[in-house]
Length: 356
Image 1: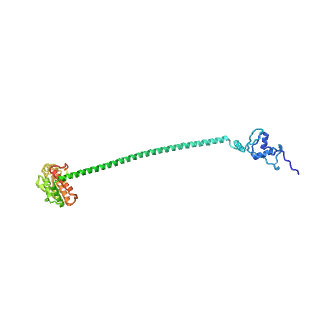
Image 2: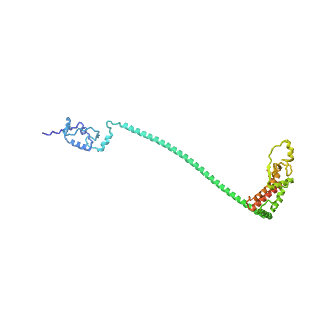
Image 3: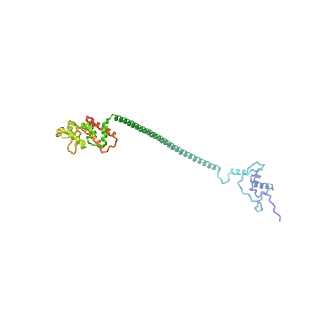
């Protein structure tokens, strides 16, 4: 059996891109493998365009229509572009069923516009937050600066106060030292002027203190100070007052101010608040004395009260020495007794404080 003859026509000439390219005068830019196959087919005999392809005769099936881009390079040239050109050309064309490039570009523009708007709003928000943070930081810096100034001022005032206190303390110490030096100087001068006999008598009395007025020291004080100070016009009452002072039984109390009835005015003028019981002179008597446990009172004038008080102060001090309550050296005791004797002398002469 004879072998069937090969058809002289292209089985896929109706859909073959090579056939279409040859008939239209264009050259196909296909992949390398496909191009080699097509070049081999181009050397064969012309195909019968009227015959139908037979798929069962060993010929390749008709090629499906694929989105292949063809580029016209002229009617007489059969040049192929590299494979990359096919991809670039296919991207530029719009495939069936895809969106319009203008709509896609519009979506891209919208996305870019939204992105720019979001970026601008975010930038404005960040700027506002940065401005707020800078403002708060500036306020905190101002507050810190103010507190720093207050602290510096307080430290300066404290330093000035400390310096002034130290200066005042040094001044007081210096003044105290000067006064002490002056007192010591006066004491030395007084020691040089004091009667050595009187001081010797005091030292002898201090070794065995007593209230016996027959000892040389107290006998001198009685004769020179106590006796003249308690020597009043009313002699009988003066003796009683001296005895009460020596026995420490005399009481002096203020007179309560009150308005007396008119019927008793004559009696008052004769004997009580307007007449001193010791001097017998008409004086405003603000105090009265009581001797021992007697119920009788004697109204005395301020001058009489000052004289009695000076003598009582002297006897109180020597009693303290006798009882051992005064613990000093002989010289301070002696000068304190000299001061009390001075008060008795002034009271005897009529000098006394106004409140007396």
